[in-house]
Image (tube, rainbow, N blue to C red; front, side, top):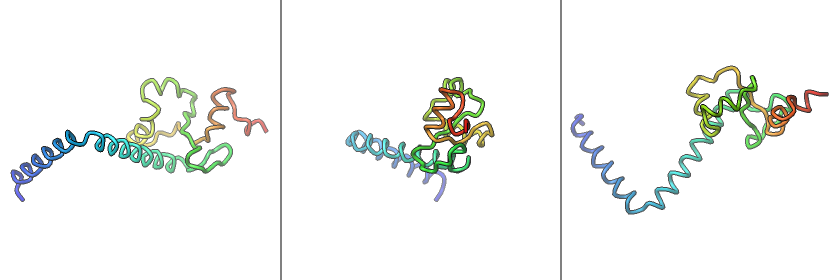
Amino acid sequence: MSYKDREKKNQYQREWQRKWIEKNPDKHREHMKEYSKNYYRKIRKEVISHYGDKCICCGETTFEFLTIDHMDGDGNKHRIKVSTSALPRWLKKNTYPPNFQILCYNCNNSKGIYGICPHKKI
């Protein structure tokens, strides 16, 4: 297939898709919400897997409980530049910088509020 033929086919597909979206805005919206949610989970899973798949403090391994922690404690400054939901994409794009770690939600909150996790006090 020549370049011109491919371009013509792509143009036809884009036009068909545009018309379909105009006729079915609710279906398209639901599809995009589901697609975005699945994409975010996939990237988040890759990032958590890269950094060790478990809380480095207590050993929690339940994916839904795990969070990405800024080791330097500069998370608030960084979230101004990169939103919380975009953090996994940012980490992957920047080839997983070393100053991040995985903590469970409880350990991450304790570290943020009290400066140290209760597991570290023992």
